[in-house]
Image 1 (cartoon, rainbow, N blue to C red):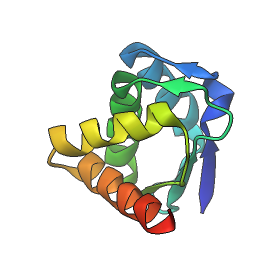
Image 2 (image 1 turned 120 degrees about the vertical axis):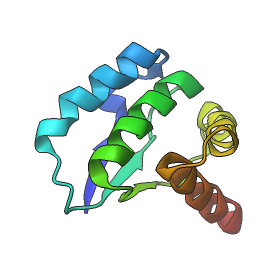
Image 3 (image 1 turned 30 degrees about the horizontal axis):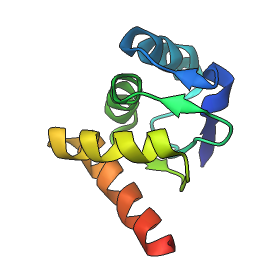
Length: 106
């Protein structure tokens, strides 16, 4: 299992092009055979567009083997339902699993 610390891309993650740039930066170090965890610690804000672009690329590359670690970040918690409802693919599955785990933990 590999953990991707989103804070290494900044604390304010706001645009679709920046989400693609973040994915392209980590792609060489990823193996589709090794699942990844996404860690939102120390990220102040993330927009649905950044998260959508990053997760779409990551989910496609990883064959859906992506898990979002629980977070109390309000912007993440606001963006996830938007993605989960707007999509019907691996990203929606990833988001729905994360939301279910986070609601079970509270």
